[in-house]
Length: 231
Image 1 (spheres, rainbow, N blue to C red):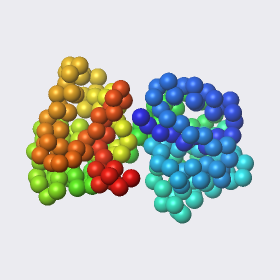
Image 2: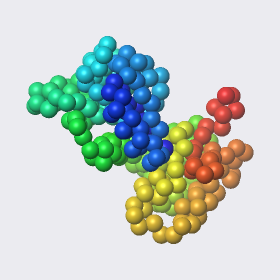
Image 3: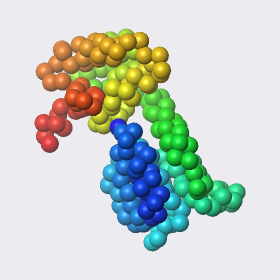
């Protein structure tokens, strides 16, 4: 499930965004002014921020600059505005925005742009090493380690584990994993479950505590058992 922060003061636009995205499984938060939006962005993790330019208190370009320069927040920002001149767009991008959508806009196009920003972020993450507790994955060397022990996975298993670790501790839905691994050409209804069994045989079975958790009816997540124990 992806989480989106909507910083927009127009209640009709907010209502339309919620009505369109919530049934698709997106989780949304809303702020009606720049200051509350900055607070939510600094205290929570989001996959994308939808940011109106004309906001009360602090406008969108000021807010975006604070996110980038003061908070060093790299969350993708998509600006929503009625201003459509080249200078307006340049100001938006100069403040740190990743994309720019002029009002009125199609919700279908908004969804496409959001998904493109998320994919771009995930592609960037794929180039780096990832660690969750004692579990580490190095994409360039195609290696996986847990507690100093080398693990061996199939290419598909490696990709599944990378998806889960990149999102950790977020729960990743079965549909999201299948789309990222196979696209529209999913081998069978049991393909993911079969691969998950193999991944768990390597990542969890030889160790005392599991790191891959099934969330019934939702999907899977990778957790750090030490953090879970201390929470």
